Image (tube, rainbow, N blue to C red; front, side, top):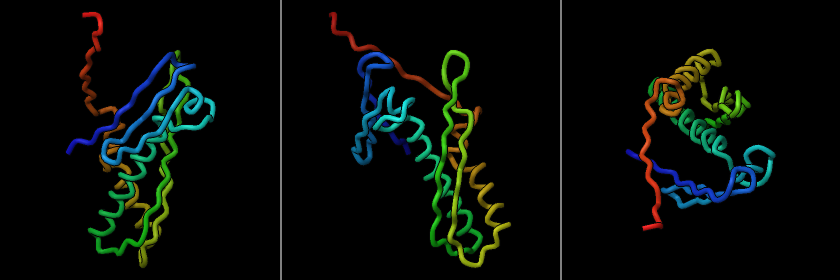
Length: 145
């Protein structure tokens, strides 16, 4: 299974802007320097990473709980992605997953155990670890034939 996201950017970093589009739904959201670094309107790449991580983690936790015989009524998760200055640039140094489960007859101790298992093993958690190969395919548009 391959999922795709698309981004377009026009202009320089501080004055430019762009659009991010999700292939499956066609949802389009603007983004800019202001949205990313100054609290302006629009999305950010980090917000999208957070949504992906929260969604993946919630599904993984639901699967783990169900496989142990629990009836999962609801899992809600927020992923807070911390973008920090590092040297001459920026880096994501921490993602905090905050989750709440509605799982009848499950003790908190076991919920925490299964939640940690989901955190360590959901595909997005694995993807943001340092052990993931990142490949690049690049090309230029040539208008000067």
